Length: 377
Image (cartoon, rainbow, N blue to C red; front, top):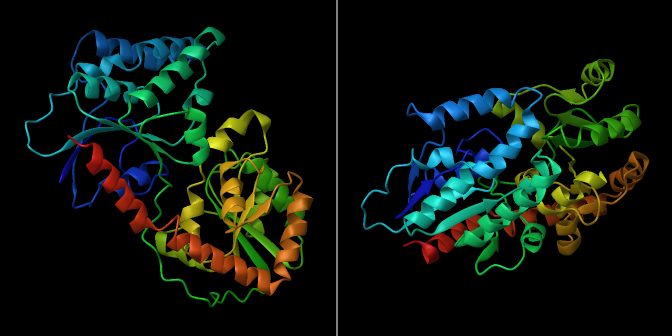
């Protein structure tokens, strides 16, 4: 058994993106004894009051000034709340996710108790922190100091590891999908002869791309693009039109959602062409890619060639890369694929190979446990 002391704003939870990765690694794992510590002050005093005041100010025009203060305070209000590690002969690690302020409390906790720190690097957080210019360098510097302080750095992609730089023990750990499903070669019968492309996930980063593609494809006789996601950044009239056409679909129960996924002819995995998002796209990794690869359908990576998903597909040959921001370019490639049964079969087999290889959840978990064993004390 390995005791994992988790100090993180990202908590293990089965149904929320980001948190589900921790859930799959840590919960119901027989080799892990999990202890989740609180990360908000509960004792009356200065820390609780200051945290409350900053939280309120963070919802006003003072937001950026609050972020400036937090970039210096680095979650120190958490430190006094954390209990001493329990005495145990069990090998122990401190674990966190490189996001928000709790990760720095985890770093200090590990250092003060002479325990190894394990950090998940899933997003390039400095790009998302809204601080004033004099504080931006500090934000990235502290983020990199967390990387160097980690006894084990778990990077979500090769691009993340490359951008973070040299490290004595940095590993690429792909987002772990749900347990592999049995993949059937036959398509679920939907009484629909269209070549059906499905997307499920965030409509924040990718809403405009997907909306443009849906507009171009909405009357296409042979190709149908269906999307599931919340709060698309579209006009009410366009959202209503896509909903009425059955192209924008609402929340579904787990059984209904899985049946819908099984009905796909292929899956679309977009990444943004926005130059301001370039660093993020190169370092993070679309968690839907390992997830849908388990279904053994062609994987279509729509994004710049240096983004993490298209880069993986180009290097492995296990997905179709569309490096063209223009939705007409995407439509052209979909038309080619829709009329080429041999290429569909090749890409479906490639997705199955990815599910059995890079994205095999059992292998990912075995690597995770193996790396923990090596550094736990």
